[in-house]
Length: 118
Image (cartoon, rainbow, N blue to C red; front, side, top):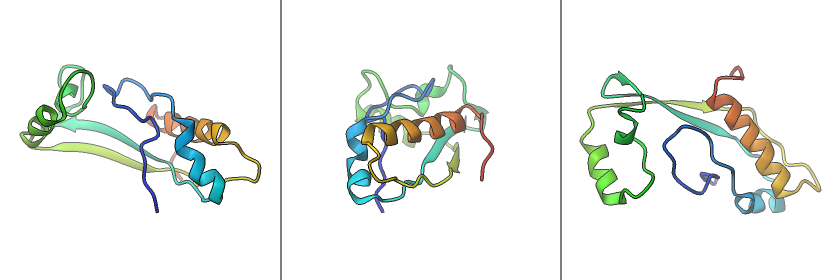
């Protein structure tokens, strides 16, 4: 099993960033199944995650990792939804671009609550 974050970057959680096609190369070459998992933070320190407190959790922009990590360790709690989605079977002749797009659409739909869970 291999886990990766196909955005290949960090963000403030407002949206799902485009996926890096190259990260799907191994799945295409081996025709390995992909199990998309959507992670969505919902609460921090027992409060709903909002623009006012999201910087306590998200690591992005000019913040150094050490500063972010220390801030993260100071929190009492972080609630996150972990949503395993339907398995994506890699098809013969499927390009990494197509696979990245299919995976992106599944995770994006889950992130915004537009799909029901399996």
